[in-house]
Length: 112
Image (spheres, rainbow, N blue to C red):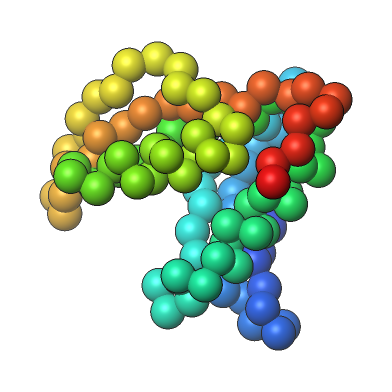
């Protein structure tokens, strides 16, 4: 069952994280609403959320072609490692380069 956790600032929902938890955690969606991007609220939220987890975390990062490296660097700074090969996912609006990532749970892993 997918779970949803909202990102809030001053009592206002400004984004959300969706995930499925079994013996691991799979992030299915993470976004900060456009008007709230750029002030690191989402980044701080995700760091704190990741540090509270005790299981491996998996995700697929969908990067717009030409801008994907910045997204990939972001997840790698959070302790995720690439797993699998990149592939292109086409949609009516845009083409994305998709990369799978895993952050392995360790007792002392803390994102700074």
